[in-house]
Each structure stands twice: as C-alpha cells, then as structure tokens.
Amino acid sequence: MRHFTCVQDLGDLRQALNEAFEIKKDRFRFNELGKNKTLLMIFFNSSLRTRLSTQKAAMNLGMNTIVLDVNQGAWKLETERGVIMDGDKPEHLLEAVPVMGCYCDVIGVRSFARFENKEDDYNEKILNQFIKYSGRPVFSMEAATRHPLQSFADLITIEEYKKTARPKVVMTWAPHPKSLPQAVPNSFAEWMNATDYEFVITHPEGYELDPAFVGDAKVEYDQKRAFEGADFIYAKNWSAYRDPYYGQVISMDRNWTVDAEKMALTNNAYFMHCLPVRRNMIVTDDVIESPRSIVIPEAANREISAQTVLRKLLMGLSGL
Ligand code: AN0
Ligand code: CP
Image 1 (cartoon, rainbow, N blue to C red):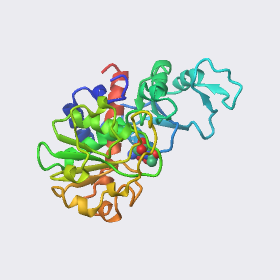
Image 2: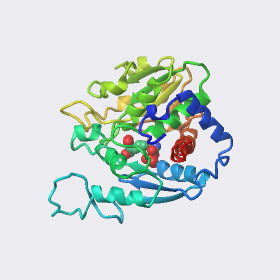
Image 3: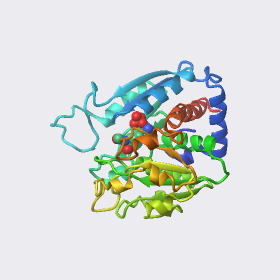
C-alpha cells in the first residue's frame, strides 16, 4: 500500500480485518519492521486519540516518531499558490511539504475541512499536496472528507461485538453547538457500505450528506423509527453539507440527543461514538455510562487500526 486515505486503499477488507485481529493478539510481533524508520505526524487540528494511538502503533512496530503541531511553534503556512505573501504567513506549503518529506519515511496528516470553499475541502486540497509533494507514503489522520483510521477502528469494534452476521447499524445525527466536519460520518458510511451490514442513516431535514458517501444506505428522517431493532447506534454530529448552508449549524434540536428512551427501541444496541463527545448534547450521561456503551473499546481499537495501516505502508516501502 502506498497511501491510505479511504477504505479502497486497504484492498481486501476481510483480509485487512484478519490482519488487525492478528495484530491485536500480539501487537509486538512485527516490532522489527519499523526499525530505523521515522513517522512524521503533522497536525493542523487538535487531537487526543489520533495523536496517542498512532504514536503507540508506530512504537509497537519499532518506528521512531516526530509530532508537529503546525499551529504551535511551526511557521504559519500559506496554502494557495500565486498569493503575494505579504501577510502573516512566512512559509508556503509548497516548500514546507517536501522539506518535511526529507526527515521521515512515512507522513500522517490531520487537516480538517476549513469550510471556506466546499470544492477545496471535497477535493482534499491539503492532503493531496502532501501526497503530491512530500515524496513519502501519506496517510490520513482525519482529512477534509474522511477519517479512515477511525472508521477502520469502528469496523473492528463492530466485528468484535456483533451477535449476527448482518447486524443493523444506525448512524444518527445528534446536536452540537459548533460546526463540525462531515469527515467522520462520510467515512463511517463509506466503510459500512463496504460491508454487507444493514446500514441506516438518520438525521433532520437539511443534514443530508454527500450522496457519494451515502451510497445505498437507507436514509430515515424519523430517528425513533430508525432505532427500531438496531444492533449498533453510532452517534455523531455534523454540519450541513448542502448549499447554501455548507459548514453551518442549522439545528441544535436536543430532541435528537441519544437517550435511554430511544435506546430502549433498539435490539439492546451497543452505543458508539468516535469521541470527543459532548455529554447531554450528543448522548445522555446514563447512555454513555451504561454497559451497552462501547466508546472506550472503540477508542482502544484506534491503536489496532493505525498499526494495521502503518504495517501495510511499511511493507509497501520494502516492496513487500
Ligand atoms: C472532530 C470532528 O467532528 O470531525 C474530530 C472527531 C474525531 N470533532 C471535533 O472537532 C469536536
Ligand atoms: N476520534 C478521534 O480521532 O479523536 P481525536 O480527535 O482526539 O484524535
């Protein structure tokens, strides 16, 4: 594997899952593979899980890691070509990216949607410049449109907890006070559509996602009806995708908060969320604290998804 930005890059999903479970059984089995290899993690946005789990995964493989928070200590980066750089940004991405490539073997990038220009976001303008100009294998640590390491961990988690071959998985929008990207829901939909699960998306009118990600998923505007018989509830907020509201909060309706009453409509479903989560906006305290909440094992699987991906990238580097 040369780069990792979406589910297709993994190739055979069943095989990738088997590799993940192999790693989970003995996470130090491949600790020679990354010897003398350096991972550079670039963050344009904050992170807790991605930062820790990816670094731990790299250490398990014997890699060295360097972490750079672009907005803290590095030069502010201009990203538009042709700009007269007389403002507050002393360096251009077009020099910074190849320079970063000089100091490492693999690059992870976190670069959220900026909501300034929908086309730039949906063309993955920043991530693609890393792919084009760094000369290194690049993987997404949540880019503008997808969060594949999260979705892979989500899939691993569902595979571990499911009781039937084809569980009913429901992704529900839930309220949040700030504009959040569509990357997590887009990506989760993309990965669920790559399985044979029954997959339903529920959200208020106006929160329709890009049809390219929704694919064949069933969209149900009645949240309670969507919850009926669900085996997994995957909660997430996202901002509007459709014009003219792209990137905006158009509803904070707390009737969409996941609570015990709604969970009672499900088939004793497990509750999932990628975290960080705002309690009593997205989900009530009692649901997230209940024995059916699997948010912590879900987060723990981020180490496994990252390690499976890094291993594939390292194998690609060695021509394996
Ligand atoms: C981010 C998002 O919704 O994309 C990161 C989630 C992993 N969440 C926040 O910014 C709160
Ligand atoms: N789930 C997730 O990616 O969390 P962080 O934003 O803390 O990395």
